[in-house]
Image (cartoon, rainbow, N blue to C red; front, side, top):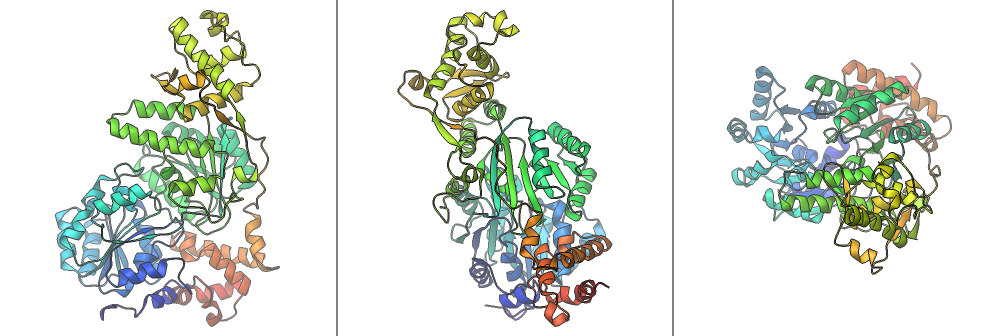
Length: 611
């Protein structure tokens, strides 16, 4: 029931007047009405699915201030600026504010002059913030990025564990927890830890049909990345994820040397540099951010056209969360991963040498196994990705927009090859008492007389030279897939190969081993990003769209805001298609709310007229 103290009569009023959208999408309306009526909710919705409206609109309909718990201190200013551009009274409390700024925000909250207040989880746990909240009227609590409460998750934040205080201290205030990534087990953990066990669950489809998932065998990954960017994403904004800080620096430098505007982002950079690079990525067009996984959560940039991984993610959840930052505007985008033998070796070593207990290592291994299964599948990647989250694809027989659908790989009987490789590892250990990495075993199988082979007299082993039917790259694929299947393992600082309990069945011939054969590289059949907007615009509208983009860039620079805060590309395309001549006509375009119409309407009409 709408309270008499709220500014808007209905959720649809807010959607139309403030956000400028004609209709709700998917489950938005059900979620919003449930929270407006005072119900608790746990919402799983993919990035770009409109999660933020699910708490922003109820905050405007219900009496009081919507308090949003967000881990994204560095982005709070942008989030608040975007809301203020819409005419929403928003503020934040975090450690970046000085005393006067904080006092002014606190006063606005207590007096009811805010619609939304963003608070960091570590700030919420302080007695001072809790006393402040008791002095105002709270419409709801929104817990964004709720997967951060999962101790086995990829983004665990200890401060989230204290958020159960919300239910204990304000039992009558509805709570909505939101995330883009959670398995059924993670959903249960979120509900338990946040005391949302009686909350209504809303789970949208995890499918992002506009994202093309592609996983390639590593072969000079930076060169492969460069080819991808030049051939398919020239001038596009994108994110490149690397495992180490050193790799981030080297990759950003490499791309810059090749004429591609790239910036580094990792925890080793000083806070000022990180903030400046993040700000540039959000505000400028066509920048590539090269980063560790420390970057990206909450990035609301809709036109990220690609997300590339140069190292294997630790889990499917992490992979999905990171790739989901591409294509928030619904346009064709690419999720590209280069994956090789050394990734498997490195990840296994990291798990075995970690300080975690047995349970931690078991969970980490299970996460890695699922990620490896996604990499090695010969089936549709999208179907496998959705199945991981307990969902089925909309169609059977493949999605038609991933590499395994566009260029199907072959599977082959690799049993004999597996036996040869495992026999080599066995003979090195039994006959020589030695353990080596993958390279030495492959050299032996190929009959190479390297210095190391000669030094250790490995050319006298019975397995020497028995594997010439496969190329070195193919043998590395055999090792990689045996490691992925748990039929081979690595140990020690040098990643030496050792047999597992499952190896014996393969050696005895009791267990067949089917393997994935990498297809010959073929340029995927897909529309390039540069062609996508033109295909959606009628004849003659493309120059109008570009003129609107130029106007938007000028306004964004003047107001020191990201361009998408002014209008999304989708809205500009709709304006270029309609080419309205009056404010009334402009107001019918999706994404043009009342505040933006009043603020920018005449400027848009002038830009359309070429003035």
